[in-house]
Image (cartoon, rainbow, N blue to C red; front, side, top):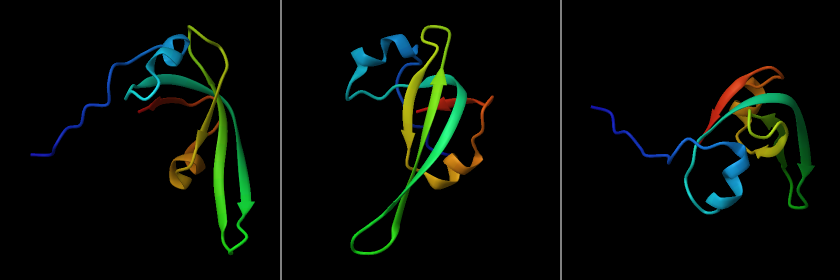
Length: 83
Protein backbone atom coordinates (compact mmCIF):
# COMPACT_ATOMS: atom_id res chain seq x y z
CA UNK A 1 0.00 0.00 0.00
CA UNK A 2 1.35 3.41 -0.93
CA UNK A 3 1.83 5.93 1.83
CA UNK A 4 -0.35 9.00 1.74
CA UNK A 5 0.94 12.37 2.91
CA UNK A 6 -1.02 15.19 4.44
CA UNK A 7 -0.46 18.44 2.59
CA UNK A 8 -2.81 20.56 4.64
CA UNK A 9 -6.17 22.15 3.95
CA UNK A 10 -7.33 23.38 0.56
CA UNK A 11 -7.38 27.17 0.90
CA UNK A 12 -8.20 30.24 -1.21
CA UNK A 13 -5.38 32.54 -2.33
CA UNK A 14 -6.92 35.36 -0.30
CA UNK A 15 -6.15 33.48 2.93
CA UNK A 16 -2.61 32.38 1.99
CA UNK A 17 -0.93 35.07 4.10
CA UNK A 18 -2.46 33.63 7.27
CA UNK A 19 -0.85 30.22 6.59
CA UNK A 20 2.86 31.19 6.58
CA UNK A 21 5.11 28.19 7.39
CA UNK A 22 2.17 25.78 7.12
CA UNK A 23 1.42 23.07 4.57
CA UNK A 24 -1.56 24.02 2.40
CA UNK A 25 -3.02 23.22 -1.01
CA UNK A 26 -4.11 25.73 -3.64
CA UNK A 27 -6.21 25.00 -6.72
CA UNK A 28 -5.31 27.79 -9.15
CA UNK A 29 -5.62 28.92 -12.78
CA UNK A 30 -2.35 29.73 -14.60
CA UNK A 31 -2.47 33.13 -16.35
CA UNK A 32 1.11 33.11 -17.65
CA UNK A 33 4.53 31.58 -17.01
CA UNK A 34 7.97 33.12 -17.44
CA UNK A 35 11.17 31.04 -17.15
CA UNK A 36 14.12 32.85 -15.54
CA UNK A 37 17.67 31.49 -15.90
CA UNK A 38 20.64 32.43 -13.72
CA UNK A 39 24.30 31.64 -14.39
CA UNK A 40 26.16 30.75 -11.21
CA UNK A 41 29.64 32.12 -10.51
CA UNK A 42 30.96 28.61 -9.77
CA UNK A 43 29.47 27.30 -13.02
CA UNK A 44 26.13 25.85 -13.93
CA UNK A 45 22.66 27.27 -14.28
CA UNK A 46 19.68 27.66 -12.03
CA UNK A 47 16.29 27.87 -13.71
CA UNK A 48 13.19 29.08 -11.97
CA UNK A 49 9.79 29.75 -13.49
CA UNK A 50 7.64 32.62 -12.28
CA UNK A 51 3.94 32.01 -12.85
CA UNK A 52 0.96 34.26 -12.34
CA UNK A 53 -1.99 32.32 -10.99
CA UNK A 54 -5.43 33.15 -9.65
CA UNK A 55 -8.60 31.75 -8.14
CA UNK A 56 -12.10 33.06 -7.40
CA UNK A 57 -10.89 34.86 -4.26
CA UNK A 58 -7.85 36.63 -5.77
CA UNK A 59 -7.42 37.03 -9.54
CA UNK A 60 -3.60 37.45 -9.62
CA UNK A 61 -0.87 36.00 -7.40
CA UNK A 62 2.82 35.41 -8.22
CA UNK A 63 4.43 32.00 -7.53
CA UNK A 64 7.99 30.81 -8.23
CA UNK A 65 8.54 27.18 -9.27
CA UNK A 66 11.97 25.58 -8.96
CA UNK A 67 10.98 22.15 -10.31
CA UNK A 68 12.10 22.02 -13.97
CA UNK A 69 9.78 19.19 -14.99
CA UNK A 70 6.68 20.82 -13.51
CA UNK A 71 7.55 24.25 -14.89
CA UNK A 72 8.18 22.86 -18.39
CA UNK A 73 4.74 21.25 -18.47
CA UNK A 74 2.78 24.39 -17.50
CA UNK A 75 1.13 26.81 -19.87
CA UNK A 76 -1.44 29.56 -19.67
CA UNK A 77 -4.94 28.20 -19.17
CA UNK A 78 -3.90 25.24 -17.01
CA UNK A 79 -5.60 24.57 -13.69
CA UNK A 80 -3.13 23.13 -11.19
CA UNK A 81 -3.05 21.94 -7.60
CA UNK A 82 -0.12 23.43 -5.68
CA UNK A 83 0.88 21.61 -2.51
